[in-house]
Length: 431
Image 1 (cartoon, rainbow, N blue to C red):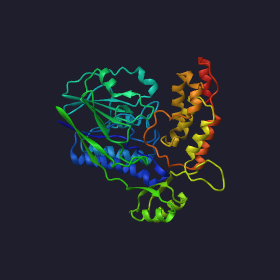
Image 2: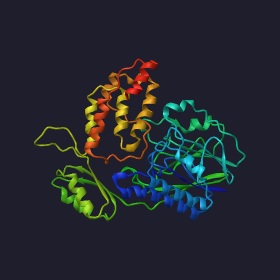
Image 3: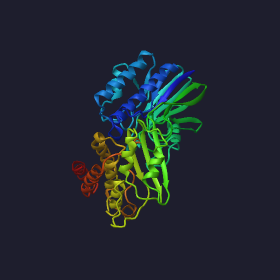
Image 4: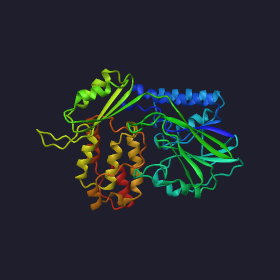
């Protein structure tokens, strides 16, 4: 029997809410994974990508990661991994460095046998390059085989509008028959049988966005003729979610009353408001929560309250939505809208924006038609950015940052191109 711990999306280095404490939380969650692996005596830890949140992690996060990997190595537990979209670089990967140091193994098309199971890897591949994949893997003599990969795969994930990697098609095209597919990228844990093969996401090890309300954890996967998948939880920082519908004449005191029902000490607090109640200042709620001991507080007022003094249709609590509304009135090409969303997306670390835009431009240049503006494009407004990870927080970032990024994206509208090599080159230089 082979028994492995399957984890993914540790996003070490993510300074969520610009908080050093939250940055430390992501590394602490990875430490807990390694500690559980040692205590459980698993045969290997399998990491399905996005070990780091940024392709240029800070020194403290690198040193912390090395410490965790040394803990596994000292216990004789191999660390098998693939590269995710957040940490991917154009040249050598951090995972390669860890492999040279004898602390990790980067999975690929050659089998890595642990016990009686052969493990293969498929790093994150941008959508524009997937048509060139042949899914040729070297054969093995083990009793079982598993593929480890990173991406959003149908039919396990919701339709975000950018899911075009189909698990069933990969299983059919692969030169090796797999008993399980161990995935990363989707932060919600999910398991499903596809073409008689168990396919699973373990979810992220820390909450990387307000939408990740479920308990964080990882998978334990056993290969013993059959495949058995079980889930274990992790102890992470408390998140308090307060969804409150304010009745008529209800306002800030009602919100304060609800918050007092919770232990807010060192917690991340998210308040969502609906209903017909009074106008409430998000800043006053956040101040109250932090005074009660919260580490971070964020407020989302979902109500549409009409102003009696000004006829201005702007929500300063959600500047991104205001920007999107303005962009719907501008006839931008699909490429320009995609780049705008890429620049403003909170799912991309600030230090990664330039390289992510460069990657998107490379993809878009392969399809010159994407720079044309159709009537449908003009009417439908901006599409979601492609290849984004789930690690995002729509509440994070300041109004000024959002406005600045949006202004940059809008002002830098791409020039027209006829699709020729010369025009494509000038387009790349322009951006």
